[in-house]
Image (cartoon, rainbow, N blue to C red; front, side):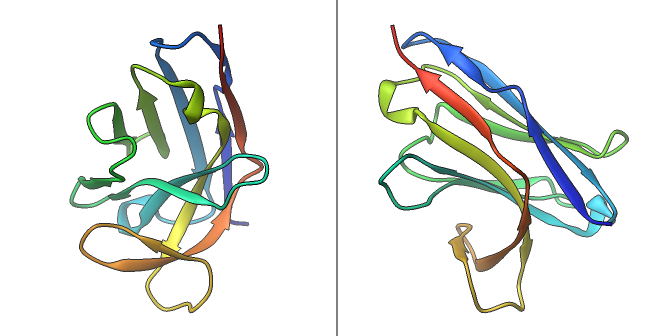
Length: 130
């Protein structure tokens, strides 16, 4: 059974840092692309970034570039999202998702290609507030 489970959300002050983890199972992470996206109440889904696991190549949306790092631990099947210098506008539920190149719904831009969100977890709430 394919699963992605996010963890690590919470409340952080503006300017602070936070890391989220995405535990994956049921598929071969090495052959995958994983995306992080976020959604705030009343707002559209927004891409945060993508990682191509076997290459380690990453893409970050302009809104977070320079403040966010996506990394992977292949041995533990975990993909992490580390965020620095958090802003109130970063407040959202964050999701990790497997990315397909062959689906046609839930598109996400990953820098050099368009992928399609395939499966994601329940999300992790990040609140940036003083």
